Image 1 (cartoon, rainbow over the protein chains, first blue to last red):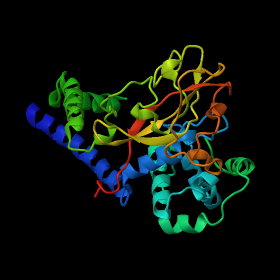
Image 2: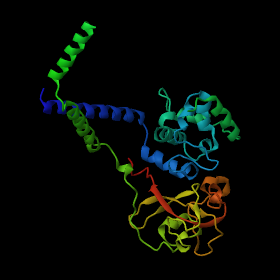
Image 3: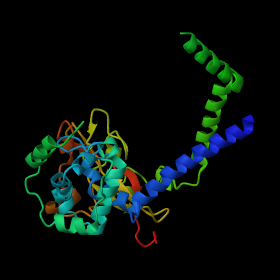
Image 4: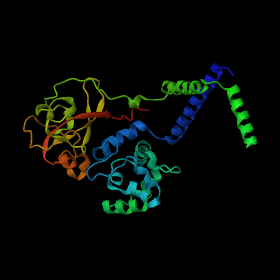
Length: 148
Length: 174
């Protein structure tokens, strides 16, 4: 095998592997308008949760953390029932979209492998039961989750 | 032991015949070439480009386009600038966010009005334009909140106006 053909094969293999990851990402982003999702995050979440989801003084961290809430149904529901989500002016489709965008953008290692994205129908149902007490409820949930 | 010696000798000779000393380096180099082509692939990266709006106007004047939703003292008059805090103050990471139209390119930009905190009120260049301001019951969209609540000190000094993105336009995205 010549050096050139070996190089060519490796280059093609590298490109194919990269492209397959792109396809998976594209499937995950199905029905998601990332520009709109990012804009809605900026307008309705970023003011407190900060541009990279780190949060701050008394503002919970999203970055590398949001995915832990997808481990259990009750915690998954919490992300929709918190006042910032449930009471937001976003419609159900946009709220589901921005939650999914945050999971992809900020979730990192915290996102479970077998997670399901939110749908507009699921969000519509859950936001009918907004939480009034959030901090203690969140603390109780985090104790139940496997948080690294 | 003899068997093991022969086995490894045979394997070592096979490897020596089928490969050369520079093979590993060649493999690494080929992988690097492959990896270097990834940024050239036609993947959308428009959203990664920094937002740099064309500028016009005086940042120390209340009429400046970025201040369309501001309510406070302009940091540009207080020893800072439209996007930096004056010395001795701390920028609150918790902020309120609105959109303003840039008169140069006609586009709407997302503006973060981070307050600078830790010193008493600046007292110059008070600017209150309040576009998009909502009552306190919509606290995330009210600029009457003391946004220094996110900083170490909650004492308000002045406000910045930092462009953090381009507003999404449902009409132009289709």
